Length: 486
Image 1 (cartoon, rainbow, N blue to C red):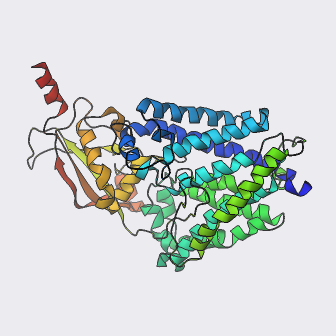
Image 2: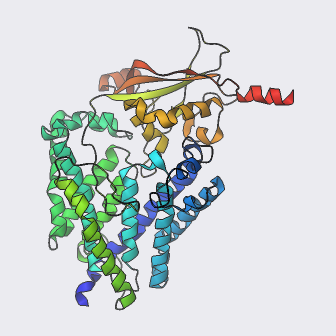
Image 3: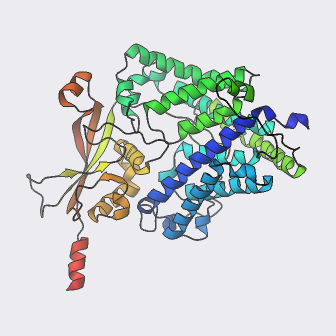
């Protein structure tokens, strides 16, 4: 069936498969390095407690069958290793069925993590990675030409990401309609990057142009993905450029990179050769029937499951980042329907005084990504995802949002818990845990150019209120050790 194959998208398949595998590597490594404090057996939101309340049909996961921290680490590091092999092109050296099995394996492993990750894994890019990771199972390898229907489904996924985000902005905050949202966004986004201060200080007319260009890129250009060549390749190029702009201006885990990778599904070999010296495509054999039939089933299921995302996009009550099934397949996406005008930050402090007085010296904990030290330029972390830092941005907006885990975080700091301290940039109490910890809410804003020259500080802040009152352990670790020795 000549119409079933799309050999002119061989290079696009290479980009999709190796790019998605690279994102998997970041996701698995991040899970392995952060899980103990977040969802481990003694974490803030332990997996065993979660799976005791959620049946397998609601949250399918390998950890429904067994959980231990050692087992979780094995799953995460195994997923990283298999994903790294896929980045290296191992799938193209294997029989087609074995390549599909490798992609299915990493998808099952990451689905198992996301479905027990609770609030720490509640971001839209988790569903995006799982949907994209399931799609590449049916892209095949060098033994067969790319199935044209799956290539089009990749474009359909990019379309939902971009068009859904554009609609939620247009329907949401008024500042998107009057083109003023970017007066605030670069300063108030969850995790600014090293260039965010400079983006924020651009002239306001450029911010308005930036907002208008965003509407064009998300509400008009995505339709070009379904147009004949070279229009589809040009549309993909526009999406790639705008996503790179977002990469430069902030830290959004792998959302932008995955969108860039998926946009390559619309770039033909001939279009790619005008920019890159790509190798010659191999001459694949005809697709076997046992491969063709599952592809058709996958396409049919995607068409049926697309009903709910389409209905959501057409609804005046559109929701962002919604998954409609426990497998996170065919989701709806969107971002920044509302833009904050003011930035709030939760600052956690500790003290080692025996009792609190007005002269108590409080020392601040520094986190890797979230703003804290006024003189520290924000770092570039994406596509690596700092989950605790992101959740603390949400915590600054709502104490109710943080209630299930924030108290546990403070208790772990009172014990100098090693797993928790590894999530931080610095620990002001390296020798012994603090006796007290507290949290305060500040308003942060970027300094003006004049303030930056005068103070060498990127931020300035104003105390807003107490966020969490001083907390202490009634039986801290050193007291327990003395009691046991006695």
